[in-house]
Length: 173
Image (cartoon, rainbow, N blue to C red; front, side, top):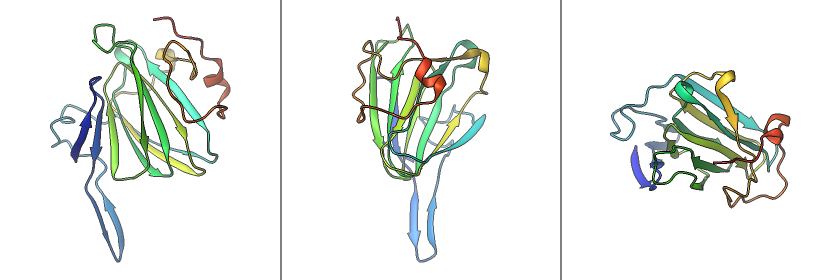
């Protein structure tokens, strides 16, 4: 996996090994030999398929010892992946940004201490993400997707949300 860009928040954008021949494709999803990921230990692998364009999932995070680092990769479709730095000791605390993922050749590593979410920009979008910690419902938190305190520049206006994601409160850093 080749590092394409590292943001000042510590979020990294990678290009993975991808091979195509007459049989089909081979894509390396994860490898620990990458220096940026050698301390990442996979505890969970999730595959999420959203049927409709403009489906928004997030912004989610887990508190305390259940905080998660994640690696996101698109399998099919296009997403806008958003992340907000919630690490109080970080120089980029409260800073949010997003990246477009539209190829299975690319992945994004997001360190522990971030809220993450994404919006589908195409119907039938599938996202694979790896987590370095187990999900714990008591540690789960979220931030309202359109919270003006984070001012994310979403590519959509009226997303399809779950009841839980629609009920997250405004964030007060």
